[in-house]
Amino acid sequence: MTAAFLAAMALPAGASPGGITFGCAPNAQAAFSEAAHGYLEQLGIQAEWVTTSLGAHGVTLTLSEPYSRLTPLDFDLNPELDLRDEMVSLPKGEHGELVAVQTVSRKEIALALLHPGRSTEAPCDLEEFKDHIGIRQNIVAWTERLYWNWPDGGPAQWNPDFWSKGTPTRSTLAAFYNAFQEQDKYGIGCYTATKLVLGQGVLDYYARVKPDSVRLKQVLSRLEGDKDPLVDVEPPAMWQFESDYDATEHAKPGKLLRLQYGVQPLNFVPGDWAYLLNTDPTTYQHTGYEGSNAIYLGRGRFDDYYNDHSNAYSYRQKLNEVYQWRNGVFSRTRDGYKATPLSEKDIQRLSQPPEAGGLVVSWRAVPYFFKYTGN
Image (cartoon, rainbow, N blue to C red; front, side, top):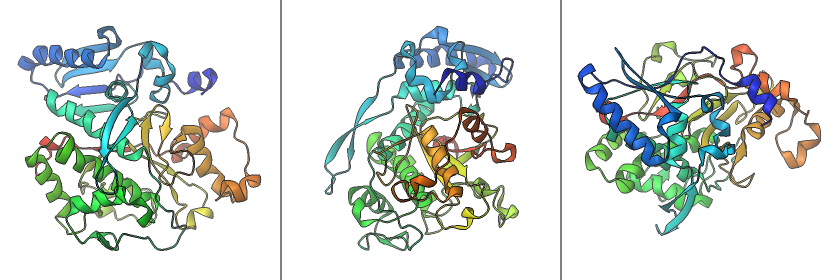
């Protein structure tokens, strides 16, 4: 992104400090702060990059200037942050063979959580914070190389050996794994794809990355409680802008995700579920084009579930894709001539929430701190 665009969209001076607040009691704050800084330094985050405050609400860690004046979308463009991707192994082969995948670093995830563009409340538990970062990284890793089929308004396609109309016919764990191991047998929209990726990231983390039978049982119980694991992964309030939204369900929790409100424009943490709303009333009625469910992958990249764009879209490309639907651009190859170019000013405007004339809703669906969610 250009310097002018970043200057226009940067967090204003004097804004809320944001960052992460760990809910530590006063007598635990000093020790926790020291341990947290030690972990951040292990990730390569220097002490002078972080502002620390101790208070009634706990220990608050916030990214300091000048880096707080960046947006998380552009962290990887700053050489001083020295961000480097990490390699992980995923059982993505057809028979569960491990495949090496290059993905976002834990350092970048932590830096994005520290950014003042949102406030995150976390338990006074450093290991749980590490797990939260690990889960976000695992979500991104499972999103890196996808090539599911796009149903284009038609019925979804599921591997009948593992699913029946979106409900597992074998174990939930096996069904989720298969959706990534035999991708050519699935034709799903971006809403379902997003729930599969988020569910897989959490399940696989506790099943394989950091085996934890207690947490895995808890997550499976939450998913399977209504015998429909892909329903209500996110809170119903995610969709409060829809005309048929049932306000009586506003307080209902999601199975795996909660909502973070008041997120500033251009603030994304790797592993976030964001939503870009198609605000054009005509094309909004087209099935599959109501908006775009977007998982942020870090490094300025967003998901590409169908490998239409070399496995990722930039923020500008994602925003442009949704905006151009109102011009009848549903296929870049077929309809590209209908597109209207967007200026820097247009991108700034469209980065705002819909109520301010933009496309990006101001909340994100994010993973729980699962140890503290109960059953």
